[in-house]
Length: 132
Image 1: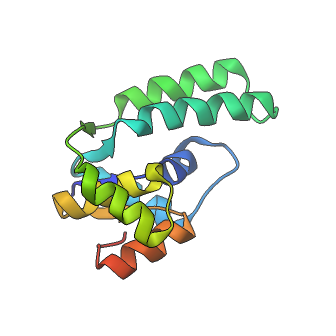
Image 2: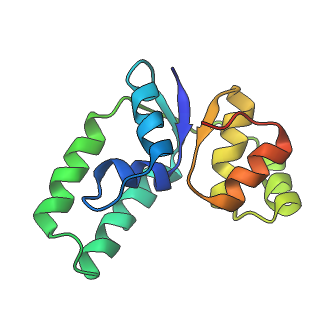
């Protein structure tokens, strides 16, 4: 199943001390389809790794291994965002533009959204988007 996965869920797949049932469910669903993400996801994931290196949670070799694993995921980057809808979502739902990018993508492509972010999940429910 194709689905939109944000960085909070993806982090659970690779961080050694993080797990969440929703992230595990999204991982299982992604085995039979593509993970569709805005281009922003690529940067978010690498930043997450470097921040965790600085905090001592990861070593550089761990980050390198995770980056390799990320490149093996069936990820499809969607760069066709609807700027007007994206900014409107961010305004109406008090989201960052970054979070609104995931919601706009899920709504536009009519895909389920996998997130652990409470505000993003609430915005998705309010907008009638499908949550994983």
